[in-house]
Length: 506
Image (cartoon, rainbow, N blue to C red; front, side, top):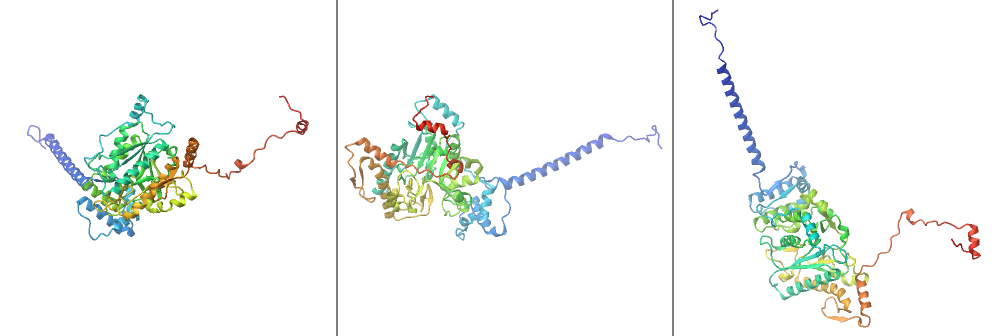
């Protein structure tokens, strides 16, 4: 055993051991940091780098074995969109038919939002409801209600800035404008007809979106904006829009909930005629609606997605009607609470469904003011394209309810149907002056009554014709309501005194 003097005792060198431990710990930390960075890069590459235009909100499970073909069709279409390549020539439209399978349902169930970088309808507007209320308070000369106390409505439509291809097209647009002005005059509705294109990126049916947004901001006194396509006519001059029914709604479209949520059909709703409330919610809807609209690659890619996921949709570029349906399906929780699907009357009626062929039968059996099958409210000439000679528009597309369609009708049939619809509506206006058309196919008119003797009474009679007749009271099945009330019976003495002619003075 050594002694201190001999140097036999040696103390351990703590400095060296502690430094080696620190070095080892630093090396381990560096390795862990590099591993985390590598994993992060893998995650980012798998989520962000796939496609910046298509963002999946949540993942989905693998489809059942019976839907493998539908899954492959949809995924192949999405890969084509990501790669900006042309569709597979062997794909014969099975992706469109696959929309009714569980594969398309799972696509919407997991949620999908489309975005177009560097595009918007305009500067973002916030707190529009509060700003609008303040403006109305400071400007009492612009009330939000008309003289009858109803919410102020602005009917909006548009037509091309230049002349149509044929004189018949110009004539139809002129008569369609007169038709809308007649209805607005009878019901105290304001009218706006636009001919300018406000956004060069949004063409065709998409042009309505920037126009509605601009009118909404320029007319805060208007409560409802009513859009109507240029190839639609009002055919029930006595029908009143049931605005009290839409108290909690901000968007009213003609649609069917089964076609929308069960079949995911591309004709589940129509954008050829709809009502939009002037509020912050509507401004946000227009911004979200327009992202598929810019012409070019963005619209073409969006059209591939819509064709792959909406039932029955042909291979076309994105249209505003399909884009709205896609928005309501993918963001149902955000929008549907304020959307009213109207199907009790013809806010949008298809002329090819036989409406124009039964006008004579309607006039014999029914009365204006119903707006439904008994007397259709709006007749839309989808697929006619009156301003382009009745044929199809450029690019092999025609419009269906504000969107694109593959329908095509002979020009002669379109012209005949439009003539009948206009004269059918015009007869209701001419009745105020004692005239009517010779036939629904003729522009000539004839006198039907002499209104010079009692003009005011004649006017009241003509206006009463336009009003919807009161429906008979329906007998209630509630026994408590049908039970006759038992009145208090007189006593025997009171009946004797009453028969003797005595009357109480109290």
